[in-house]
Length: 134
Image (cartoon, rainbow, N blue to C red; front, side, top):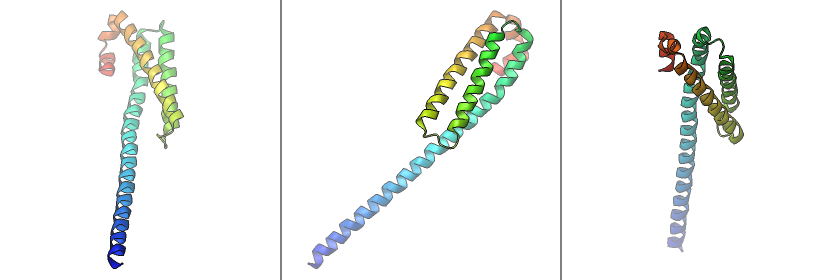
């Protein structure tokens, strides 16, 4: 009887240690997930902060391409709003989907701006524009 109770307690202790280990691993993974998103958040904010400089430089050269500039500005604002919506809880699927959609729109608008840059060699050769697009 004593041997079976010792085996039972050993198995119970093993299960408890396994559960503690699993819990600690899950907490560790959650923290890594949040840290990873924080790093992405920093890079996206940096990207969004550089866009106004790009717009100001481009405005001087391509005034008649107003639609392109407005699309870049609108896409940047929507992406920034999406990032803010995700903010404290990156696990929210709806907000993350909105952020991904806004990022796609921003990439598309910036792609159109690059096409405009190709069409205007003076804009492409401008030192400020070259620095912003590298």
